Image (cartoon, rainbow, N blue to C red):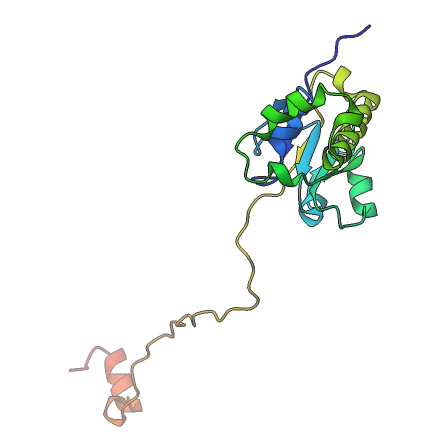
Length: 193
């Protein structure tokens, strides 16, 4: 049997449950700037849709955390190997380290868990199963998930400062400077004075 690599879990945003998912999967919590991930955790489907994945190899899995009131858009299913909705567990909101409680809860029989935790652990089992079935844990490195870079917002057309155009300065022609034919002939003959 081949040896499985420790999965890498990366979150898109703070407080989305990255540490909890990483602890539940016995995974390494990657940095949000790391371009590789086995599982991407996100609470906003629009932000998840902005993630560019490398389609040449295996696709990372997406764990959407939160209320679960959003449908599974096809865009997400085409960019990720699997999309799993992890329901929000109210008792963990504001808790410093829900992963500590999670380790204890996962050791208990499923039927003995409160209903919200049954839903969460059921979704977590789906995520773990999809991760193992994907085969990416046998690869030496996680798939690339290139996250969008922060850029300045474009706020429409803005006025541009007018650039002063340099115009050549020509001497003004004055009537007294006008040369007549006699003056030109004298200058050509060296008699000008």
